[in-house]
Image 1: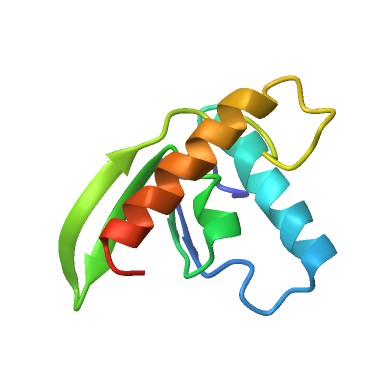
Image 2: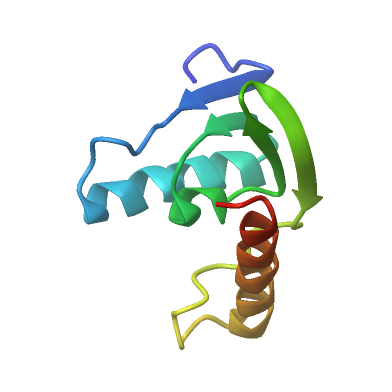
Length: 103
């Protein structure tokens, strides 16, 4: 991030973190993305995947399918989130997609 890369690659950036630090790292990545930073993140968690605008699903190293979610709308569980309805829609869309993929 120091050298302002065109693309930031994040391989399981929250894999070994507790829940609070996971949220902190995801917030930093979301803020960077909102400022125009392109990020490619590999994850096995829905919580991290929800931060993505575009999800590409890989199976055995091959792209199986992809879905566009649009901008992150905040935590769908947060009742104080002014975009909660949109966040719930995004969550459901992602969950349905992942279920179709057999995840």
